[in-house]
Length: 322
Image (spheres, rainbow, N blue to C red):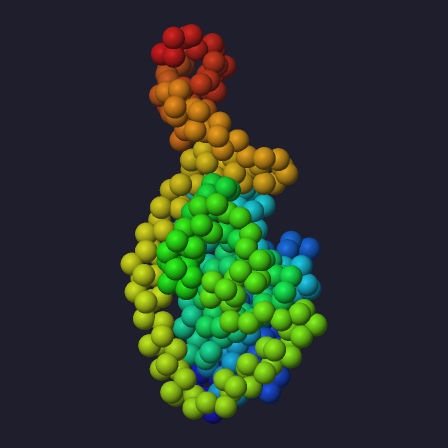
């Protein structure tokens, strides 16, 4: 018996993912199609648990990551969770990033080759999960996109670090800075995926590639993956922990509040308006300006500069901003 025994998929009690084992191949399917296969903390925990199980199961030679349905592979973090939780408690985003990093590392470091079966949109953290996999096969209708600078975040969960390695510096900057979709053919031309096939051939293509990977020596494959991960590991170790802290602090600022709130309200974020605030000498960091005012009546301190009334006692504040 193994020192650390693997589990039968049914033993793990997953709710957000489907986890199956068939022959030498294990498949992890993000099963939240109603949310375009975005992930929450619970989803990330289950992804990490599944790939850790793959790593310790000698009956499994290949791991496949995909999404339920045909619309989305994965569209990154659930922005509703971001807006509801992390803009109110930025410190909790630091905890959230621990779950995300654990999920990414479980894919990258599982000791078995991994295939991204890209069955639809791979957006934000979804494209970062695609990048964490060793190989990728996409359906012809799949599209790829990073969204950080349009929703008030930075794609530092793998995209800023790995896209320059995978597709080259200029192309990586184009994806990161313009936030425009690239289609499957472009993704293939750029090297973001290995194959593009009609959607009805996707499962066959993944199965054929998996069979090639199964027919290799497991120890040699494990070390090949470790060696091939060198540059990804290097830049990830240098930047991942910093991103975790910076993004947590940043969630207390105006940009993520406006970006995430606009997304959940289905409106265009006022990104240029934030630029105009700064250009006119106003605050582009705080929703209601810096915490710089004091109430002359109750002496409450740290009131936002744009407040006309005290948030504690309701007294009118001086018009001169004092």
